[in-house]
Image (cartoon, rainbow, N blue to C red; front, side):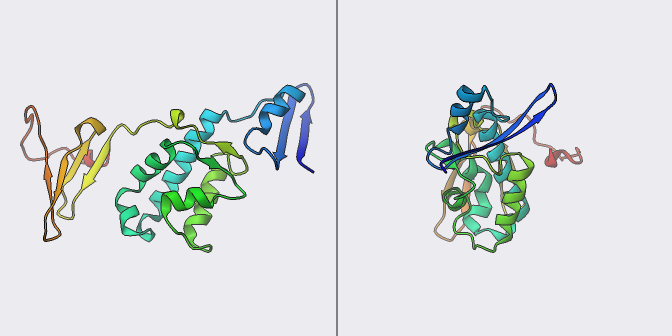
Length: 193
C-alpha cells in the first residue's frame, strides 16, 4: 500500500488525519489537501523552525558528550547545515541530518533518545518534510568564550577576527569605531541573558 490515511472525526469540528506515502513522503499533504480539503497542522515553515529547536535543545542537553569540534560551535553548525538547503527530515531515516549536525553518533547514544523526545515535543516526530532554509532565521547574536573566561557577544556582521598561533593559542582581534565602556562589571546576572 502506497498511501495510508487514518481519519479521526469530531462532531461538528472536523477532525485530524494521519497520512503516510511511501513514494512521496514529504508532499503527501498536498495530495490530501486537494482530495479531502485537509490542511497540515504544521506548515512547512513551522516544521523547519521546530526541527531547529529540537536539534538546539538536544545539543544543549548533550554538549559535553559530543566531539570537541561540535561542542565548540554546535548551534552554529545546526544553523549552517539546515540553512544550506536540500535537506529533508524523514523520521524513518534521520541519519543524514544527525550525522551532518552531530557527526557520527552511536545507535545507542543518549543524544538519539533526546532528539526523538524533542521532535515529539515539537509535534514533528512523525512528519516527513523538506527543510526550507528561507524559514530558518539567522541567529541574532553569537558568543565566543575562551578558557580564560573571556566572553565576546557579537552579531554576524561584527565577528572578531581570529588568528591561530603556532603554539596552539589563538589571537582574537576586535576592530571597533569606539569603546563605549571599560569599567568593572557590576551588573550581576547580565552574562546569562
